[in-house]
Image (cartoon, rainbow, N blue to C red; front, top):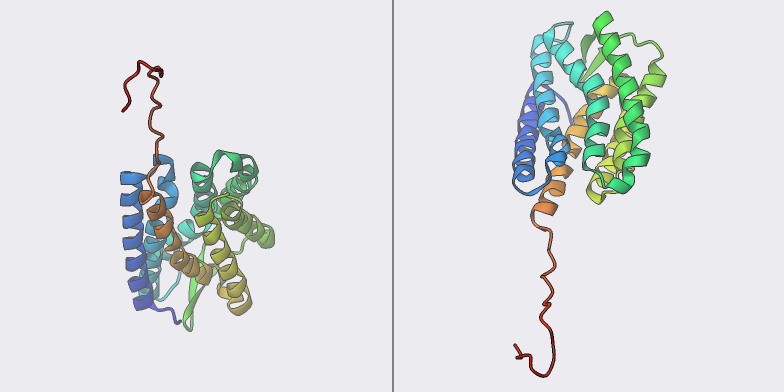
Length: 227
């Protein structure tokens, strides 16, 4: 697949539409605490649309570059683990505190870097490379992946674990094939994978909770009329 302004615009619009469906399904048939994850495709779709603007401007250090980096780096680092904690079963909350803490620390470091440094986008063939000059870049990337990928894998929810497997595989592929454009290609891959949330939101919408009928407490005996 080749990335371009048109590809990002079309993909972003389609993924944002999927996110809108996920949000509507959640409002109608799921718990309010599922909304942050249900809205994730909406955020990632908008993110790809921002990158389509960046393509047309030729990269550089403009507002589109900064907006793209803010969503890709600190926002996602905290949004994903926080959303997973909200949606996951209670039995998983204890172990999810680790990726949530990693996300909070990583997001703070990335936000500080964006506030004090200039992020630059460079068009490299059919991909976009982003340069920020991060201090301790390897540590921040490790914290970022711990927050986003491991939170999904540890969620104890089948749909979210599936999404975690997909984005982990995407991260591995992007590191091998597009090392210098990792963050751009991985975000695009994660956006496409987030379509799995469409199935996740629809699964509970189609399977409402069944309540047990009340037990008949009438006394039984020879004088009790049969139904």
